[in-house]
Length: 186
Image 1: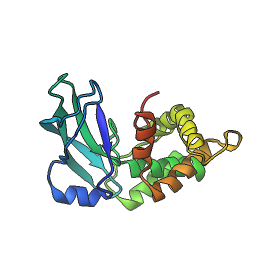
Image 2: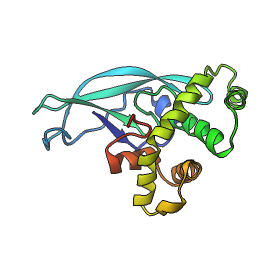
Image 3: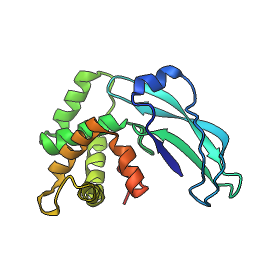
Image 4: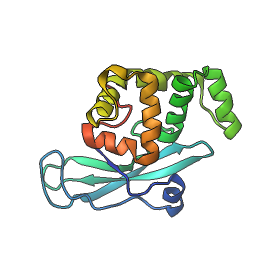
């Protein structure tokens, strides 16, 4: 299980600490245990941003009651994706809202960072995954009252995510509502 946290808002701040993100986890989502979960090791993973690739450490926790494990991640570290939430959001915005081709998007990302290794297959994957997740994203925005059912399409979904991300932490709020992370396979 993965717990999405939102108490650090900046990737650079998180990376500069150079430490494992460890915060007390006070209950188990599997069995309902209400005490603190025990730290249970950690693992490293890549986090690719617009400018740099970072190696971040993720803390794992174990429930003393049922033995299930979970990890805590900040909202901009999407589970199972190496690219940060902000890079994926930029790709979706350029593809759906600006209607740019994959080659144009790759050129704009490489202009920001010449070492960028994003490919058209990455872009295709993110856009196709977004299309598959669109019904859940649509339901989220309708349920919080931002859109009415009849005037909502994929372009307005990406615009809403961008606007919502400026005001709050969309991946955190989305996970809090659906208990699924943004872009999780439906």
